[in-house]
Length: 203
View (spheres, rainbow, N blue to C red):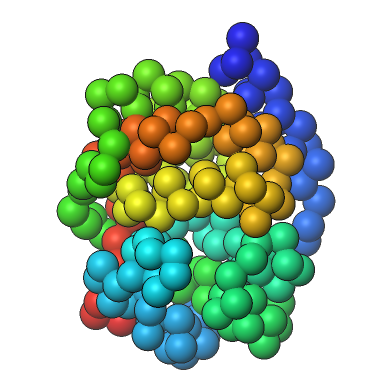
């Protein structure tokens, strides 16, 4: 029932997606992404507080990256550095940077983090409705790939959805029922899955 409900929520969001989408320019995005690479081009770099690794963006869904940057612009996501960075970008720059980062597919190493990936495999079933089995192939381009992402980043993101630091009705509803252990287990499961996500170092 929970998986079915998640699927309905995903479809509802997909139908309501009306933002204009213009394909970005990869070469222009490379130049615009220079400041991004100070953090996102450094493997394993940690956010100071709270401590979690800066997420892998290479190979991520292009339209998801656009959604994320615009959420930082609007304040739907709370992170001072990212809000300042995104706030200075035009729509064209956001499209271009997103196209460039999406083009930088891995593969990269996988890992478990602090959770139990076996337990997380069962707990993550509801996530598959939007993010696809194993988090590898989302059902829509504005949803992120989760497979291979840093587990500590994923568990932090879930905690932010639960607390409201990230404002997303679908994810808040899902995360509300999760304990810290649930989040760590789910994050460990997705972190253990092979995927194209990477930290681009040769940009």
